[in-house]
Length: 242
Ligand code: F6R
Image (tube, rainbow, N blue to C red; front, side):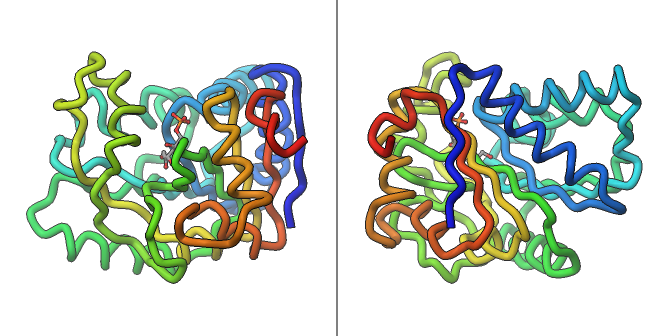
């Protein structure tokens, strides 16, 4: 079941996402599922501003990130580990030991997938934050990923690597070819999910997620089976469903 919220601009989209985040963070020992990419940056800025002005604490918060590139070091400037520290973790009071991000730079990636899934099974994510790829991916579950997938290694689609080249000096050859990602079944275990999408380039993926057939060709369409998903859009991203 989708609750669709359409806001006028990115700041208002981020504000809507923050309202839901604030309620979750106010709970006792909340577990957050977090995404990287452009879409949640405004939300993370609001979380930091709220922490600074209202003293909202993250000391009891546990986080799990969706994914990480394979083949670049943890401290690479474009790793999701670095992204999360720069855009959120370094500016709030979350203990480093409460942060979980899959490792993309260890020798045995199959073992890392199993380890991460085991860690995930110990918790229930209270609020999962998602962006959506222009090809309908969530996490890095690219089209064709089975709905029952758990944490796994995935090749990145050409389109995804093109979309992300902007973070690698517009040079697609620098964008990693593989990633480790929470699976679709791992994501679906979250109690509550928010999807943030803005811009006309997301309109088709948003349509596929909300109105399209439920099919692995549009991985986000699996969310049609979840009973608590709020999709927060600007008018451009909502143009095919509004
Ligand atoms: C990031 C992630 C991806 C992004 C998606 C949208 O952790 O899992 O699914 O959410 O690629 O990226 P942006 O927000 O940069 O358009």
